[in-house]
Image (cartoon, rainbow, N blue to C red; front, side, top):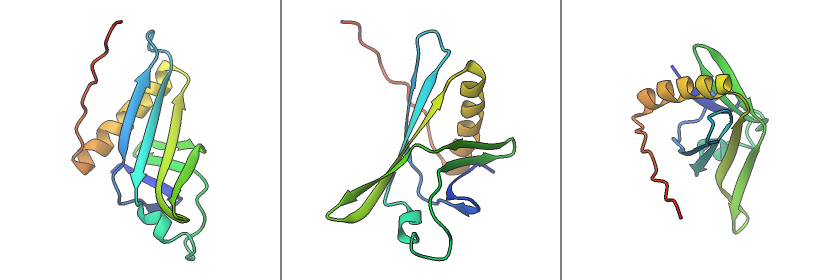
Length: 118
């Protein structure tokens, strides 16, 4: 089972919007996760702990990013944006294996964007 956590051991139930970009040669890439009203923000003052990063957890282990930011509207947390940067083809492949598992578990589909030459 593939899960996303912001506090280790506490699964996030809200499924994010995920945007992927990749360099033309395929050597690096970026995944941007946007969570709208994630459950972890409801519980940040509870005994569960504090947000220390985004943890992508599956049968292979963990992928960790510390680039996690909350979005506030009128002083109240509304969302989280997390960015995971992949510096090698191997880290891209590992990330894609996680996303395949996570997608299957959460009913996500992949839509390839069109690129336009100008």
